[in-house]
Length: 375
Image (cartoon, rainbow, N blue to C red; front, side, top):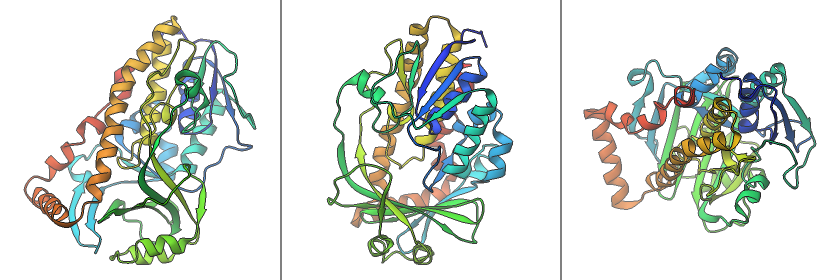
């Protein structure tokens, strides 16, 4: 640490994963941090997250590893199945990446750990602060999510477009704690599920449809709609869906990675900079990476404009690549007809002949070390 951030005032708009990680990373480097959160309390609607090694390197460097391990489960594998429940391929993370830290955690538990750590480090969190326009201050960080007002101040009005897909998410009580993620792939839809600590199971189900208007994460829906959309899925899916008593649905919209991330005084990170579709499980992970590299860049030089430009230059190529990979993965999960048969056959053969090669396609994501990248 160079000390360039010592006692520098920083205002962060948004108290989610991106904002709280940034608050902690900046405070650990000496900044005077204030987080403005519009909600009356920092809370999360129930949902799960997959934290891959690239993000865990940051969280471990921030000293959060033991607390997170106590609230999460290890992820040992990713099992791909067809809609009837037959296994297509199993990607054995424990065997091929024995030292890598993949964790499955409830988003609310991650928020709790981050909030407590930020407060303990001396950050101020002001609740009920709805920021309509960018406030004054020498350094303003926009971690205000999908509809970021700080992004709009930097880039003007932007209009995303609907992908033709909607997603449901739910958390159920379930005894099966086998530490792996399962993906069930059907024509025009897929379902992902994995266990969470405390006897819970996370479910995300995506359907191709043209019937959607709103974008967001908090639209309650009738569980019967979810069950009807996946009525012909087999294996454990019917049992899981029968236990869903509360579900939320949202439309998946494609956003461009922000053209402009900073102007020397304001900067954006997380979903404010690069909203992504949920098909690589990297949304929260990218936000955590952003937070570390932003703090490290600001700490590396007292010239704030140079530091923010470095942060943008370091982050934009990687996040753009991940956003594109997530967009492409949506098609892979939803194949139908001969294309689906051919793709599943190729995965089965690959899993038998060269299983490590299937996993190596994601080395560029999981092997990335934000801590080494920016210091």
